[in-house]
Length: 145
Ligand SMILES: [Zn+2]
Image 1 (cartoon, protein in one colour):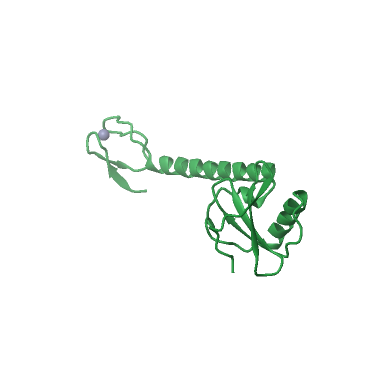
Image 2 (cartoon, helix red, strand yellow):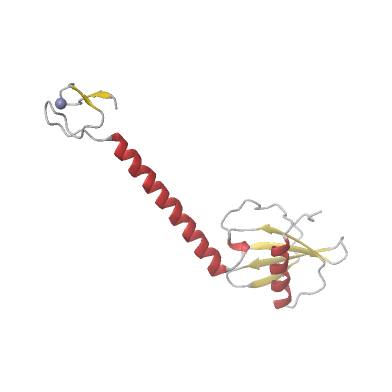
């Protein structure tokens, strides 16, 4: 416990005092504010976590992470992502790909690059919200490797 000056009468009072014993001024407890701040930040983090989990559950896919950490860069899919891509591709009757790379194209569209021989790459636009895959002949993409 330390002594602080009352902002009203400048009388020295205990830092834990809620009111000044000299003039009756209501001293705000900084400690209380700090604790409430921590509680609110904690609740916000929890809220973000819950919303994130719900979003992931509803879309059921890694594609819906709203980060654009690999926007414009090819990313080698993890084994789980590879499974998901395989399912998406076969649902859309695209077969014969042995190797995949993905990159974010826009916030809601991905490009899946696939090759069957390691030289020729085919590119597909994929929109997770509609589940649609559209083959593209755009040659603006640089091969993943
Ligand atoms: Zn006072």
